[in-house]
Each structure stands twice: as structure tokens, then as C-alpha cells.
Amino acid sequence: MNIPQEKYPICFTIHYRGEVYQVQTYEGQYPSLMTLISGHLAIMGFGLCSGMGSCGTCLVQIAHSPEARRSQVLACDIALNDDLANKHVFVPDSDRGSGYAW
Ligand code: FES
Image (tube, rainbow, N blue to C red):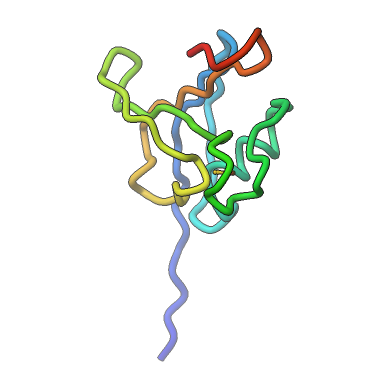
């Protein structure tokens, strides 16, 4: 018997260029955190290899709170699931000068 699973929203926060975005999505709605970010924020040069894991342009930092220690990860390696719930995702500002500024 195939019982349909109810989908619960996954809520988290994205910080980018001083703005704070409250995100609500569902598991499987996007292939990865990278595709969600690149689909909603116009970030020049973000996710250049389309999630192949080879360009490194989708680096973000993730933390439990804005003040907590952050982990740096490739957003294309992050699935949209409960592990992301209530986290804070910091997207670097890559448009200013060379390199990233968090
Ligand atoms: S999109 Fe290239 S490493 Fe993630």
C-alpha cells in the first residue's frame, strides 16, 4: 500500500548583502540549496558549474544562529531537507572587488 506522505515546509533564513530573506520551501522543490539561491537572487557568477561540484562559486556559510560558528559548504551539496530547518545561510557578496566578502 502506498501511503502519500504529507509535505511539511522547511523554513530557514538567507543573508545576502545586508538583506535577510525568510525562506519557506519543501523537500524536493529544488535539487539543491544552490538552485534555490540562484533561482531567487541575481548573483553574478554563482553556481557556474550548475551543481557539478567543480567550480566552487556556490560557497555559502551555514550556522544555527547569526552569532554561531559557521560552516563553509558548497550550496550545490546541500539538499533541501529538515537538516536545513531554522538555519542561517550566509551568501557571500562576490560582486565587490575580488574574492568574497561575508
Ligand atoms: S555550483 Fe559549482 S561547485 Fe557548486
